[in-house]
Amino acid sequence: MSRLQQSTLLHVIRQDLGRHLGLLTLTALTVATSLGVIYLTHLNRELVADREELLQQRDALDVEWRHLVIEQTALAEHSRIEQLATRNLSMQRPKDDQEVLVPWR
Image 1 (cartoon, rainbow, N blue to C red):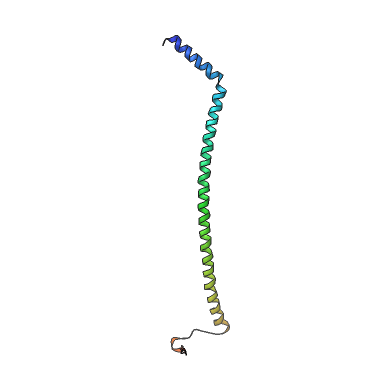
Image 2 (image 1 turned 180 degrees about the vertical axis):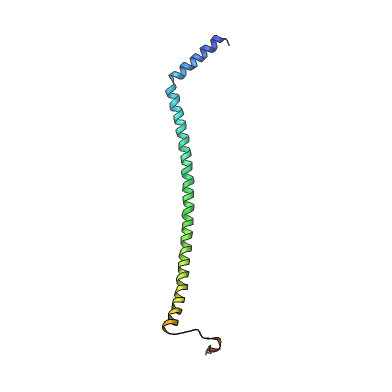
């Protein structure tokens, strides 16, 4: 290729790019926007999966908490009855030698 042909080719390329600069810019912006949408969709899916996992953990903790409240209520009720019996009725636990077994039939 001669020097004249190379300069003519470069000149034609520059002219072509100059004429279609708006189209090239729009194409580049479209590709960049598409990549952004893909990335944000990926992040959204990850966040939704994390949210679901956290909701499952919350539900499991809620069930455990309810069981602990029931257990606490059962334990507190027994000790409260024992405390009231001791204080108000002056009751006390019998000693081993004071226990009497009643025969069944």
